[in-house]
Length: 176
View 1 (tube, rainbow, N blue to C red):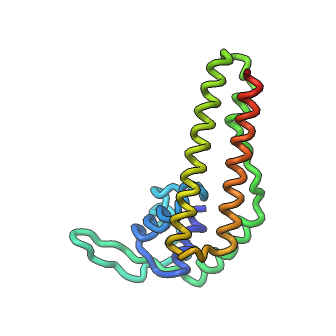
View 2: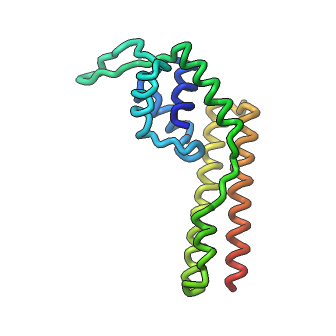
View 3: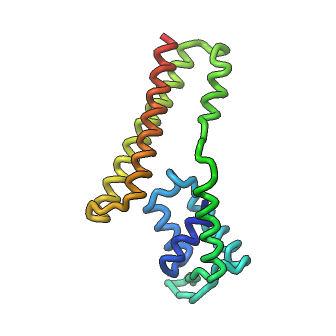
């Protein structure tokens, strides 16, 4: 997904690695896209080696130089292929760690299981609040003109978190 995001951003405009990091941070892509900000420079290097991007200029900022990249025509074709692949790939992700723990839940005291699930519930609540904050920021930045696909995506993320919260609540009830 790092390659997809980097190419997508560069398709909009030429940017430096730092600019891309800032955009991905503002988009909160670490949360919803699984993109680690630290992986961007590695992706830039690989994409340049593969001729999907090229350096358009090198700017001097203080004692540092920063390369500004732009997407190539080959990169635009690769971007299309990445978008199609991402749309066709199954998006069903199971909470495998949780399921594995539930498989052997009888191996620990119920109180420990309950406490761990309460912590999980708290993290889900925090995730939900962070998502709400991200949506508010996006709405503010876009003057409440959030694109339809973004709205649908946010709705789906909220639904997934609510579903997990309900699942945890059922597990906690079962432990009573």
